Length: 480
Image (cartoon, rainbow, N blue to C red):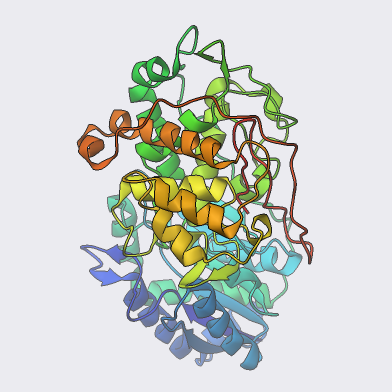
């Protein structure tokens, strides 16, 4: 059986760093492991471990490219051209210090699940760390492109967390040779086609970023709601970032900020009689303080709720924040001037560290400013992005740009309505982060915004998930 060993990351962007007692980057560590695997596989013992068919291994490196998807596609083109029956991509994890254990990523196909099951059992046996199971990823999930980019059966391993001291000791104990033997044991088990019952391994998260705490909502206006719940909302954002950091599987991720949360919630939340309304009906999108997109499963994963009307306020906001975080970190496969939507909007050097600017880019995604079908003439998305990122300083340039390109998001998205919406977004910047108070214009009094028309979704081809839609009563939202 011919197996490609893909070394995660690349020499110029080497991934996570494992400190003492490892002292190596993700790329350097796994490059050594891959070399040792190839050396051992040529021996008489490991080549036929457990009575399996001989393993013929070859190594593939990812080369730094203009985009993540290009890098992955080029590497897995080598996998295909090399005639691999299966591929194994080597990584290790990094997140917050409390994250620990071993996990394997699978495409969800029967052979991928079988391969992943053998690798997962071998890792848990060798490292003796918590079993995080098999996680099934789609092609647009973080880490998922590697599992779907080639014809060969694929798996991706995350044996330990470099940010957890106990995991590091376990990894150091096993050593480079031990890791090579561990992976070869899993590969040889798969090559022998042992077909035990395998778990589906769907990732399950506690869908409440607030724990056992409850938000105050009764008889509160906008400012009062955010002031009273400031600490709890900050805790929820921190918890969301922990979830997404683990989902990133060691890849770079852009955290959600409290400014993102406050500003987007302020613009989207349901109001009744001047007070926040946890029972607000957002068209057919269900009931809740903030609206959730109909394609929530696409953004938040298979364990996202299908019925949005039965969520508590805390669950409603948790899903909303997960959705916003996913927009910043989940590639949707649409190229633009300097990268891919939407991830590269938030990784551009001109906006890195610009918290208000990134918030406005996030709001622009939610409201369809980067959906070409919503313009009368072809839009210049690079210019729109640049002017959007300055909307906290002066909203007029982006309003003029949208008007010139014929943005037609529907009722509720006229120039005055968009100006009012930008005021709602800017109004929360200083409350979320007082250090940013002087960086923003003083917003004018925000007037009510006209309700939006029923959803209009651009055509989607090839069975791709629907990712463009109208989002709520006060705005036109097209995160797609």
